[in-house]
Image (cartoon, rainbow, N blue to C red; front, side, top):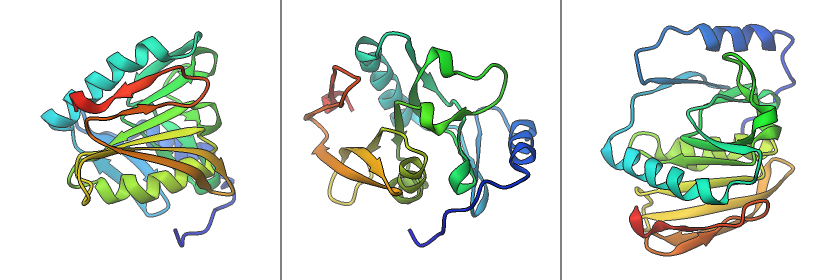
Length: 189
């Protein structure tokens, strides 16, 4: 990405408060990026089926004391953003009380499921932000991948990039790294 990392703005709390107080239609998800506020409509059927199947599989391999969340806000102050992954895993002790977003460094796994309208954003901007935010693993479920539906697991974030990636086509399994002891079956997608 060509965008520069921004210093944590002095008015970060104002940005978070604005995000929290946005009046959005039911089911819509607002995200704050360096480009501005981005609104995502409620996802469609295939997206929801994949999210539900992933959630079910994750429950058995989530580390003790952690939980799988859908649509939990994640703050990445180093890039001036607040994102809302489709699913993420966070230790319960790190889940904020109230409507505050969880700091990215506490997210063990972020998952995005692309839709036709947001695929490029999930493939590039969110991967960039999550790597900068120190999210240990980023799972991109991409039914719209130009090379065919696939799942890519990004890991080992450092210096704003993920240094490892493992891509498998739908139908194969993909193993999450520690602290997860889990192989996800993508055949159900």
